[in-house]
Image (cartoon, rainbow, N blue to C red):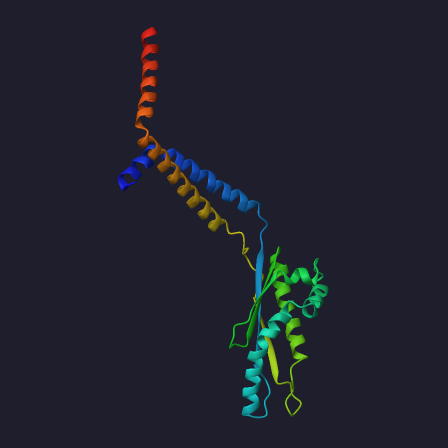
Length: 224
């Protein structure tokens, strides 16, 4: 179809386009409103060399931290870290269930580990993220080697969100409405184009139908 044919289709079947847009946009809004909200909160654990007797130990400590970061990332979702969190916060879930709601990022060549907790309530997400980061830091601290002077070589700082999340991470009403409206608009345009092409390919049958309707109208008028 050329551009002019598209315009003819839109003008003739504009009501179909409008109907599809309203229906799918409204459906997206209803589904979004009925979908339970989810909130996310993040905490980061920054590992650094806190004690070194010389430059060699400092370099070794940095390399050790970068190398171990991936292992510590796996430790985040382990029962060793999560079971104390469940007990401390009195969560109505097991450690394995909580692990499924945690995402961990541990970029290579860095010494920062970030964990994100998803929960049905903003306070739960916030407090859980803080607790997991704190218990991870304590668990890792027990496994870190010491310098020749008996000092712990690697220390960590926990950095958390300052407050619970104010808005849910999902679902997004704006995005879902936009997707629904665009989907309805596209569907309506395609239907309008299909109906227009059908009309153009079978003009004879359409003229016959129009003639019949015109004849019936004329006969009715004569009788009156």
